Image (tube, rainbow over all chains, first blue to last red):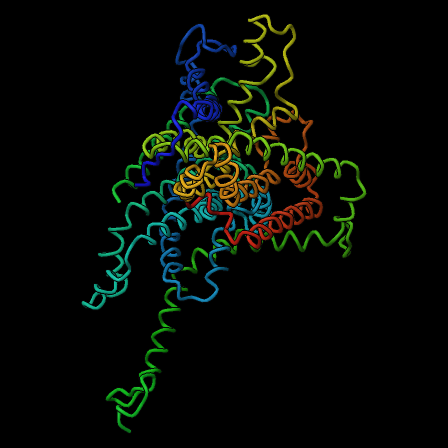
Length: 266
Length: 307
């Protein structure tokens, strides 16, 4: 059995490796843990661990109209992005998986382009385009730009679901008289739902956490949470941001666990 | 004409239509249907990425007076500040990539050797930061590293140092913050490729008398190189165009490529200059990724699909 590998090396001989790996894991996780703890601090000074505890930074977050408005904008945009990107990405993944199209390599490259093209270039380009067609500082503009950035994640997630799905089942349904769309809805989609839900969650979080493009194309009434945070960080370090960050970390954990739980159902 | 004498492709239906024609029409309909499924996504990508970037490229070819000229590109070789920006960017990218290899390789190696359950628990430590906002993590490092930040407060309280160390708002701060953000991009593909290395090869090596160190050096390490290369390329490429961390942690002293683009367009409204910077950045990015794909035949976007 090679699932539980057993090289003739004892865990003791590997102790240095575990120590090193543990340190790197600490490096990766420590900043988030520190921010969560700091967000409950009672003082404006950066002390760790804090001397006194309070919820004042959460009060300052939820009590501020500006932060609340920015949060609402971000949630709206992220929900709409997930709603738009998920069906588009699923449809594209289905078509790519059918694999009968020529140029499928080029199509794949184009759909996943936003993962490797420098985001700053997408930001400047989108701003430039939107300035001509009046989409800057609009929810629609934000949703379109975020959809393009979320699309590759939906495509890749659904595609990996499709790879482990036997398309012959859909063929059977069709040979029994179902139309192509009905066959997809009744046979394929129920079995893909975990990948599709995961894709939707990734689309949501991609939009919610997006900074660079939002920096260019959001503003005024449609200022996103990340844009406001970025500007606040440029000026000074306000502990309110620790409270907001904690909320964002919790959101990431919840969405990732949800995606994981759905994934396990496969 | 009898059906029996025709070859399969020329089979005739009772109504006299060639079967091949029907099949061809069906294939065409199928291809059109699939294209229709792709078209909304492709249209958006085309409109938001291809059109604006093409437009910017066109703009970069003209100088401020609207004359066709190489002025926007010539500037890169003439002005010392641009040369310094490129040098800084590559320096940061090299140092961060190096740090990621140094920290990421042992972690990926450990993950690949752990039993499945332990590995999936440890993997959370890589995946959670991967999906936590870049802004949140940059803020965390500012809190930890700044003049009156956690590390300086600790060290001063302990009496180790009298004056705060300059950890943030400089090169070191940018490197630390960016290493933290890039590390998962190296670890995830590297771990995925290490998992595919057959443990029997290692066992065979040890059976033949190789020490654990020699087994690692002569068998495991060479087999892990393609995965390492794919992590290195993606980290390096992402570093070249990175904006948030250097903008917030560089203290105005570490000016990277992307920041230069933002300044050119937002601050000076010099679209030609910003666009030219963007075109060169994209060209370098695509060249590196293309070279990688040519050499190893793998796609660099794998990091997002294997989870």
